[in-house]
Length: 422
Image 1 (tube, rainbow, N blue to C red):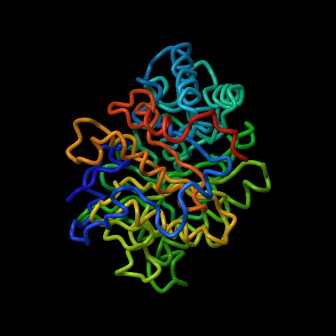
Image 2 (cartoon, rainbow, N blue to C red):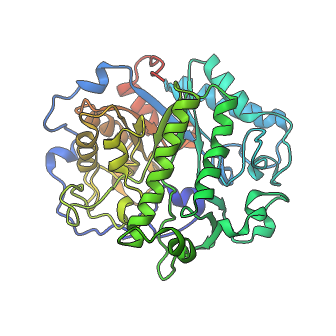
Image 3 (cartoon, one colour):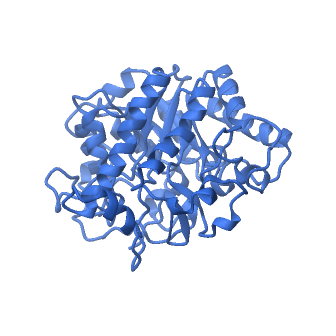
């Protein structure tokens, strides 16, 4: 089977999250949402939980609704989303501000984002990120800025980038792959540059968080190789395999960003939202009891478990975008695995929820049921390591096509949430 995940919503790619459907059927106790091993209602429910929503700007998924709107209309749409977060009794917004090596603020290093005006490098006439931080705080919301480190463009032609774009000035930095253009994670100068680009925003604004999602090395495309041969020849000789070298490159990015962020603005938290399967247990006994077709360790060269155990990040939001009872990647298996992974560390665990899959026309019965996500929250609250949830994405928080978000609010968010800790 092919599972269409969040990456497909954002990029239009298909099939990268294929998951085998041959796993054993889910346990009945999990299918009805009961928590196992711990009493439901303890843990996260007893503390100020993180209730967030993602706002995607790439391809105008959530905001702005289309490129080329006036500054006034862009601002009005953004404020409406913040107001919706308050109305839904959320307390955090994760806003995508560097979608394709461009910026939603007047960056010193990269051009204005094309998703604002329709043309990369054109000043939209206002400061979206600065406004978002100020207006979120005025509403009692935390504002986490969401950056994509390595994605340059959803095409492969550097000539389509704005004049003076760093990728045009440094063509050796990029790799075309799968119809898209990426910065090469194997180049130390690229690693440093993307950190500098993101830290420009951190230096300018009192951000509550710096947030990355699941884009490190790109999702694999069948029959195609990511061409980093020259970088591997130059920098990879001390590693047993290319995979080990690639994982070390990603580790370096995470570790160095963590160190620099803490030095620059210690109160700003660092969080990552990976694809939820680190490794399948049939490949590694430390892995989750899943049969996912992609694993971050093996396919994205992202050792997400290590980042938690080393304490390089402050929080992690695994994208647990499967229903309770999924035969290959059961939500009721993934959440306990992550709870065990963060146990004993300082890293907080929030669960990424697939609100975008909740639809009365879904081909999957569970996602037609408006009670599915409410059962997720109830189940997760049985694990004290789970400190909250984040919903993808903002336009579904607004539209709520099958009433799943309203059910979560009615069942679990009876009052406004306290503002989460920084």
